[in-house]
Length: 208
Image (cartoon, rainbow, N blue to C red; front, side):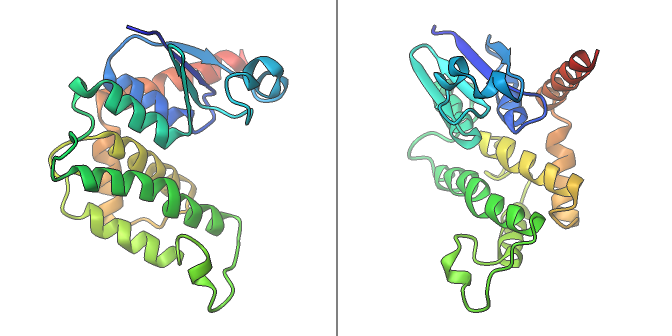
């Protein structure tokens, strides 16, 4: 089996993909990449020309972008059950909400946090339409529970749950009972706890 090599920084969105790797329970090597010259240098840009983390190298394949990494790993290790199989009725919901979180939700939250105002009558120009519509739509998707795909925990939950967790923590997503219950439920997973501990330990090691 090809080696998994994971490039990340503990203070980045790489924590999402790190959690996904822990859910898989397969061997991987973590390469901690520091901000600044390390991340923007020639050596790392050979992996990701954007000079950003995370990135995943799986043999000769390189994948970047958290949602793409989560989706790739779920399919590459299909036996782990972290994505509905092709043709399964819940496959559509899995893909829909994984990329909803990576697209409209992320854009809406960033716009709110930076104070970007969509001019009146121009909401159709932006992919998320409005912050309110985006948040209400996600709440509706999560209400049936316990996960995005009913009883099956998937890579979509890793991404959606991480996005919601950060939004609730930093106040860019309003607290709603459905959101808080969902985040608490998935953050209690052993893989989520392990990934968080690894990243916090790396932060402390960097400070030492």
